[in-house]
Length: 249
Image (cartoon, rainbow, N blue to C red; front, side):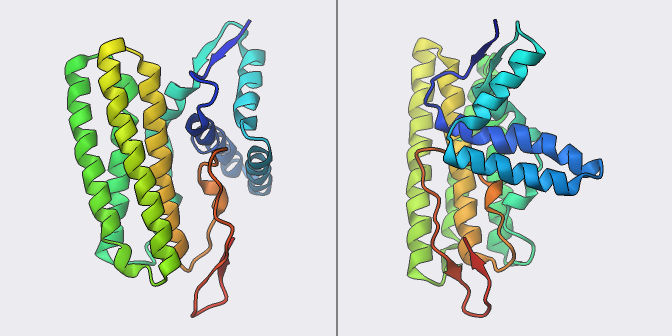
């Protein structure tokens, strides 16, 4: 009998990362094989199913591995975190259409933070390496917050500034939770809690980028890119650029 161990049943961040970190990269192989239309349709369908049935992607993954290898034990908290560094998430970043140095800095710092977080499953086994990784994460969090603050000047509406402020507060909350989880880990050695906390920080980093893209870019916005988690409601208010008729759902 297969056991798919996802840590805590309510790990919404991990469930939200299954699409962008596991399923979407598989679907991208269809694009490279000449099935772009199929890839796009499947991607949209998976996103909609996850939206209406939170946790669907995790159940799909569980059923797939059960069929392929009945004896497999898989920790999806660890897997989604570890795969982050292998995913091409350039589409998540602020596009080159915005050439201000603040956006370039934001892209670099958020990429670096997520890259370091994804090293946790490899580094956690060696205490010395893990302590160095923790120091790098703390520094990367601070630099990410600084780079986010530098973008406020480009949010021209009060709605945009308030939305980013809300996401920044959530990011700080996730950072503090990650720090507290690390302290608990050195007492009780529950590494799965560390993976879950790191995944929450990954998701919140993506939500920071998403909010800035909504209010600062005028090119097409693909909502399916970003993690969808059951305890968060994605904004549905249209953002209208006053210079064009483009809108973001």
